[in-house]
Amino acid sequence: MTDPTPLIERVARTDGPGILATLIRLTGDFDRAEDALQEAYARALMAWPREGAPDRPAAWLNTVSRRIAIDRLRRERSTAMLPADLACELDSVDKAHSIGDDRLRLLFVCCHPALPPDTRCTLALRTLGGLTTREIARAYVEPEATTAQRLVRAKRKIREARIPFEIPVLARLRERVEAVLTVLYVVFNEGYLCTDGRALLRPELVSEAIRLARLTVELLPGDAEAVGLLSLMLLTDARSGARLTGEGELVPLDEQDRTLWDRARIDEGVRLLDSAVARRTPGPYQIQAAIAALHATAANESATDWPQIAALYQALRVWTPTPVVELNAAVALGLATTLENALAGIVRLEARLELSHYHLLPAAKADVLRRMGRDVEAAASYRLALSLVTNLTERRYLERRLASLSKS
Amino acid sequence: MKYMLLIYGDERVWSSLSQEDMQKIYEAHRAYGEAMAKAGVMVDGAELKPVATATSVRFTGGRPRTVDGPFAETKEQLAGYYVIDVDHLDQAIEWAERMPGMTDGTVEIRPFAPVLAP
Image (cartoon, rainbow over all chains, first blue to last red; front, side):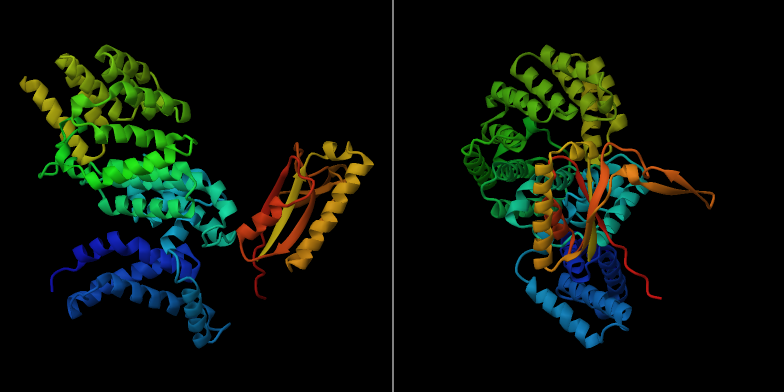
């Protein structure tokens, strides 16, 4: 048989997080769960070339990793308990939890307030997103050892303080929802625009984030921001079919073929947004969803309601005055008024230290300069952006823009 | 799983309370302790005397030295504790949230390390 590695890698990406979540519940321990899953991958690597790949590889990995986990627990506890009792105990634990969703439980563990905020996203990307420590380190622009250390500490805290693998009761859900939405948005964004890697998209991360957002909305139907986030994800993802050419090249929003946008997703997103806004508890996700909705429902680039988008970005600045939002606000204001305004706003942001490594700042400046016909300055900004960008698809896009300038 | 709930607050605020207000808080602690006992989670609990009564034995290079005062001079002091036996952290948090007399201050939750087998 051929090398099973690509098949194992594919199943690991699509089904790995789900299998891992169940193993964490069974063993009550992140490290034990990860070890059992790794061992199952190793056995697949040995067995599949010999016996042929199973018809349902995910089910195979699920069964084998579970057996490995139970065997190991049995060995550790063999002095304390008879093996048969342990198997029974694990089975009954399994049945009691068969309703519900292990990945949703895992999400709530990752978002537990006993964990530091920066750790929550790291843990979620590692376990729910299935990203490697190296990929997370690149996303956060930090040494791999720092990411690894944070994960070790988080797992130890969960184990030693005994953070439960449970969906909290309603009263507690409300205090945790903000952390949950933050983590879901990070997972979604990493799927929509990977920081690292050859591909721009990780569709399995996007669909998992949307799936978990739907479950969160079901848990908290009255929460306008949860609905807002789900709407934002759907409206953003609706454009994914038009974001890349057949050759995998990035297509900017203003050049996308709008007939390729997913109308059903847009309709659902808009409907959700309307229901969220009707609750009259505004928030940053609803505002971003409203911006996405204006783009999604514009017949073409020139029909885009830029004054309204610029106004929404001003509102968003009040909620989340991050440099990234400031940048988008400046660009939107420019497109609603004059390019000089956009340029002035971007130049003001250049003084801010926290944006000095952010490739989209010089990229946005280059785009505005290009539209103004100031090609030489635009080229310099594209070069600066190229020196900062980490995603290969974005890199190629910037290179094309730069090349088209020197031709003209 | 055993957790210690460590009650931190400003002693000056406590000592400035009227006799009547103090009695109310003691009453609330009695009720709290009874609720814990009824739920079957109560292991132990006590109020501590003020830090002015504290004595510390400090070690430097393995040599003990007795000094006056608490471990650290802070704005909030350890005023008392409870030891509870519950299933997991969320239950410990629920009990901590019900701590009487906490207008300001902190309840720190610390899991017990397992007792090593001999």
